[in-house]
Amino acid sequence: MRFLDDEWILPAMTEPANTPSPVRVRFAPSPTGLLHVGGARTALFNWLLAHGQARREGRDGAFLLRIEDTDRNRYVPGAEQGIVDILGWFGLVWDEGPDAGGPRGPYRQSERTDLYREHAALLLERGHAYRCFCTPERLQRVRDEQTARKQPPGYDRLCRDLTLEQIEAYVTAATPYVVRFRMPLDGETPVYDLLRGEMVFQNVNLEDLVLLKSDGYPTYHLANVVDDHLMEISDILRGEEWIPTAPVHVRLYAAFGWEAPRFAHLPLILAPGGGKLSKRHGSTAMEEFRAQGYLPEALMNYLALLGWRFDGSTEMFSKEDLMAKFTLERVNASPGTFDYNKLRWFNQHYINHVLTLDDLTLRVMPFLAEAGLIAPGSSSPEHLEFSRVRPVVALLKDRLETLADAPDLMGYFFQPDLEPYDPALLVPKKMSRDDALAALDAVAAVLPDTDLENEEATEARFRALADTLGLKPGSLFMPVRVAVTGRTQSPGLFGTLRVIGAERVQSRIAMAIKRLRAWTAEEPSAAAAGTRV
RNA sequence: GCCCCCAUAGUCUAGCGGACCAGGACGUCACCCUUUCAAGGUGAAGAUCGCGGGUUCGAAUCCCGCUGGGGGUACCA
Image (tube, rainbow, N blue to C red; front, side, top):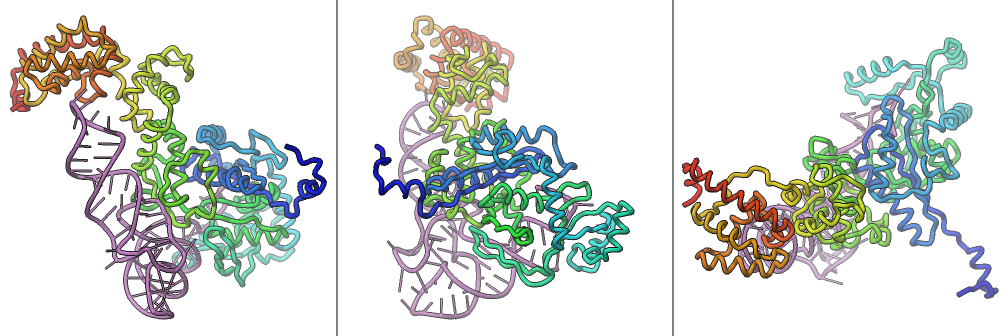
């Protein structure tokens, strides 16, 4: 199907009348620690806007990763790699970044300091910025005094109008200085936000923010504006905490003579009790959720819905669904509370209903290996433990809320012998020790010539046995369950027996009989008697 | 204190002037299924649409005020 010969269609194809403008967005974390879920959601929305919405609309969409490592004091070695790793695990891919490269690099701000210094100099030259020689101590003192007088704290602009002579004196004395932005003293600055519409700020309330620190590194405000312009960012999607300084950024673009990108300030993610989501409430870092056995799919689905909505009733969204349906227009402006419960529900749902058994098995294996239940190895179907783990996962996946639940739930399938358990568990309520013993004896007797592979036949046999003993089926099943698993809760008995295997089933029942006898002899006790009627 | 943002059940939300005595989901409770626990199914409770004024024939939906929650107020991002 080619249109090359269609003369009249050619011009339109080579030179579209209205070239849709490309959408270039960025996620710009600072490498100061682990990636917060809020940051992950910001990254997600950026990515969805560029790779999803923009591309669907026939525009170019690029997602860049930029590392904002301009704070030497908070820099954490290895944090950048951690962020790159976890974003990859989360499922995001970027077109340009410190690792991926790209035409607008470098993508690490510490490698762009010359650029910031040049731009600060430009602003100085044009009178849009000034050198401030105030010491941090003085600034602190000024703030303290203002607070004491119940005045709004802020820089008193002492250095805003120094004379040339004064400046020269400071410079020759090699006094350290910062470069501050010269904000208009009056008037107002409107900021247009894609989610909120126009927000108007009175310039009197805005400060002469520091652009270049005395160590020569830029602050966020300068680096951000310079980079976003140089990297041709079209849309800034960032956290709501940036709203207060957005007007300054707008003024900065104007001072440089640049067109400002569009802004969309994403709503904050709040903690269950209100306030910032912090350690006190539970996990906050993506790395922690990964370690706790959350699936990236579930996390993505949950995080997408925390602030974005498709139609109010659809809730299950795969990555592909989000790509196909996400629109910035449907992002909410109001903050949302992080609901650990709902996240768990999504995780459970993906584990039990979305992932294939093979996939789930592969993901569970590292957790089992970590707990020492299976041999470590690569996560692939070739792993020698795969065929052993798979049937166990099939049996227990419906009660797995996180992958990390696996070791506890599955231990007895992998260990040769059971961990010690309370023999009293072998005797169900309303049953006597002798009844339980009789049941176990009867089962033990029948086991050698029972084919556990045939669940239905085994069940029929056990039911008949219960009937002969005058027991309800459940009363026979429970002692067997406890004998074989060491606990009162397990998957269906016959599937459990099948997977554990005849050999271990027999030895565990024999052991249970032994312990039950011993237990009764040694402890004809009140506690045990009391639990039974 | 000052500046700013936000406001539908405990939580996430649908709703964008009349079809809403407000819909979905998590959570909670009950029942069903059942060999235990889950999962699953069915159903229920839960919202004076934060409050008060307007505008309108009519407001959860528009406007104003208040209250509440949150954010910012660094040579951190």
